[in-house]
Image 1 (spheres, rainbow, N blue to C red):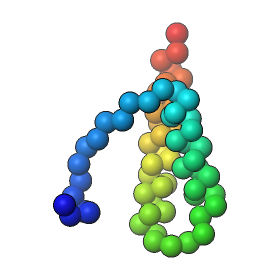
Image 2 (cartoon, helix red, strand yellow):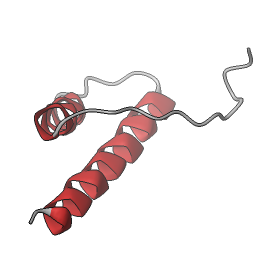
Image 3 (cartoon, rainbow, N blue to C red):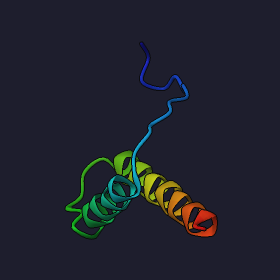
Image 4 (cartoon, rainbow, N blue to C red):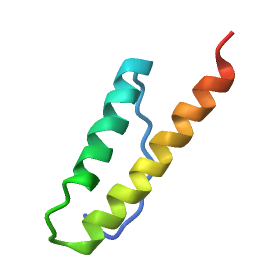
Length: 62
């Protein structure tokens, strides 16, 4: 499979897992030591998407 091929994936996790994924992604960006700039861009995008999920969850709390 070509690495540039896009595909959709669904991941199910609880709120604790979502918070942990956001924290570890944020930590990876904070401690970025250089390397492939595409990986750093991916982390920025992932952090943004995870934050959106956290915000959406905060609006759904009863």
